[in-house]
Image (tube, rainbow, N blue to C red; front, side, top):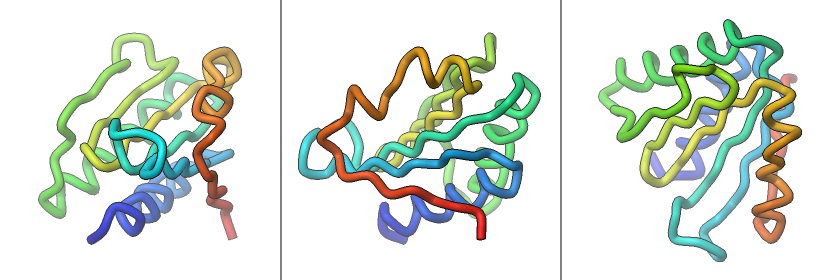
Length: 115
């Protein structure tokens, strides 16, 4: 599975837990940090944890382990690092405060919507 398909699969997992405002930032041409950032919002700490656990558990089930996890202590911003794809799960207020979309504003962005 290439990084773009992998990012799409993660987007589906986020939607399954009612994550919203999902953006996929394509960093391939502007940074070596990762190929893609996935950014999403959640309404509560519980939902942030549910989304992070769903992504981690379902990917682990198919043999894909998370390289690094951060943010489980406060659950305002959980980061899951899968090398080529980095997932950012924000509580809504934290997302507005950190505004990664603006910080990485040069990256082409795709929105994943619930159909």
